[in-house]
Image 1 (tube, rainbow, N blue to C red):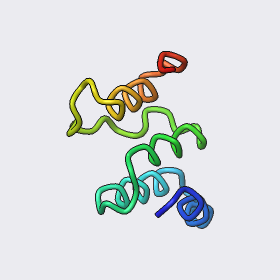
Image 2 (cartoon, rainbow, N blue to C red):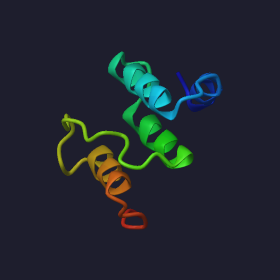
Image 3 (cartoon, helix red, strand yellow):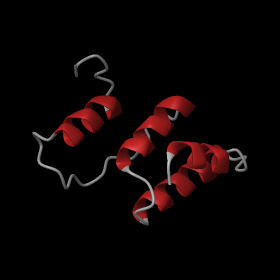
Image 4 (tube, rainbow, N blue to C red):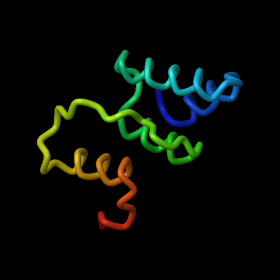
Length: 79
């Protein structure tokens, strides 16, 4: 599922908490990437979301560094 499809589906969900649960479920089912969750959280102003996940990527990987920076507000720290 891509960002456009996810945004289209989220338009039908009125409650913010329900939308977050839906997005989390899609991630857990492997239908969306973690980066998509991070991007949606930023676009929708969801603070304290996405929840911190168990990192499967090495701490030096670009995925880890990017997600960690977004979650903890270190914007501009990654070039």
